[in-house]
Length: 420
Image (cartoon, rainbow, N blue to C red; front, top):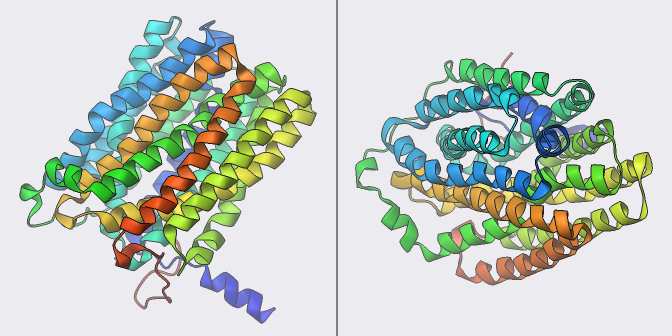
């Protein structure tokens, strides 16, 4: 019993107070995302009558616009501070999502979700820069793991609530999501932005692009996201509903199972990865995802209704193991590879790998889902196996000091838990 208690205490991420406050805001924001994201394409296709292929392009348009704004956000995060950029991004998204109930045609969806994408593109690099700036270097894997945990907790609760609300009214979904963006702004107003780097004016994107190892890492993550999380978030719900006849409540349960498992497993996985090679962890992640994607395909083909929902939820638990590995490794390694004077720009490129993945995944996958739905998941699985090979090959080029996730003991002077 004492050993178990000691193990539980060892999972404490020992983060500074401001980082905990930031995580609380992220929890509220993730709750809103969980309400809307599983049901967005269902809303566009099943409620507004927009074809699945076009609905997939709407989701991709969000990422295209995010790609355009992300680079500006990285520069601004270095020059004026990430907190200001993050607040502006949240306000833009609140307005766009709050107007989404007015959508009746595809072009309206493109406009509003594109505007939301401008905010989303600025959100991720500014938030990542803020977390990095507020956290000691040897605790960043714990900070980003905790961020993944709190966001998944919010998404889990949001998915359950959203499944109930979506059966009655989609309008309430969008209003609630917009409200959570504004709640996050209120939390951010309590934070002190980290000091700006004295050489921030000399940093440039040219420096980032010349870092071949970092750019290869960005490309790897784009492939990984396009064929895993992007298709899971955007395309598994309509696949489950239209191929396996899973109800909105069932989709909400699948979404919640994923998020709740990450909540439980994220910190143990982060602790387990300490001292281990990061790129081997990413290769394992891709193999886990490949198997899960094939499982989704089989479940959708052979089962239906609540049986399908249950099986998809079980397979989603395996998929979530890969998410925990990604949450522990990806952003901490990106931060370690970055130059401090251009941290915002480096993390903007890192965030753009997500945007590229979210462009390619829903756009290509949406048309596959429309014309050959059972081909989507095997194609994605094959590309995940290719990503595993890429990760192992890239390991040879990494600086020796960043090969492994840091192994650290509790640090005196840091807050032991969330502020009370």
